[in-house]
Image (cartoon, rainbow, N blue to C red; front, side, top):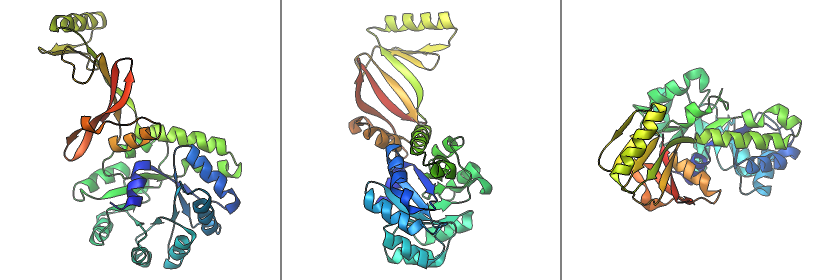
Length: 319
């Protein structure tokens, strides 16, 4: 996949921005960066769009900046000259698509139905915008698209907020999600950059959907396994089952005397998309151990992290 699209997939959220004055561009871009979302789609619904893109790309090179609501080849040209690294259109506009392809700039035209997807697929697209997502079936439509269009990825935008974000983020055919809930006009007008940083950070956590999966405790014998499991099940009325090497109580606790790479045990954390979560954790200095990865149907489904919690290892599990 095109590197810019790969990066969008790693980031996972694309803030859709409308600035009426370009003088706020750098402050807003820095807020996005500090909030953990190093991307912006600057819409051409404002006369300040071109200047905003130029300011962001010049002053904040770490920010991945694209242009949105691009309806004509002229607008696409303006955006590209200003430094836009990708172009987004609210419809499948042939002249915009042609202009961008000729200049080797990634373009994401919007579709709403299978006809649009087939049209994009015929042009070699690996990802398309799905807009307006909530009005045209939302996650149910994305699930329906995943059957006949298995390799296509989508960027749903329109009606998405921090509440329904998890429903989109957990779907395999979603490359990233676009929205403006963390950069709404009231916050921008008030120059509430701290508020935008806070909403960005909250959105990143919601995007990844980290939840506790299970904990494994390593013991010294099968007898100790069974005794510990029976006691927990008896005290708290939890179901349990076991075999010669391990026992489980309540589905969240596993007790084993056949540890693999663990000495004390392991903690498993679920996430919406494992590769995206690994990329996010790497920004916090926590690195995955690729030699521990397990795969199914071409996708990584679990991987251990290079972190030790007093003898407990930690691994991520794909939801």
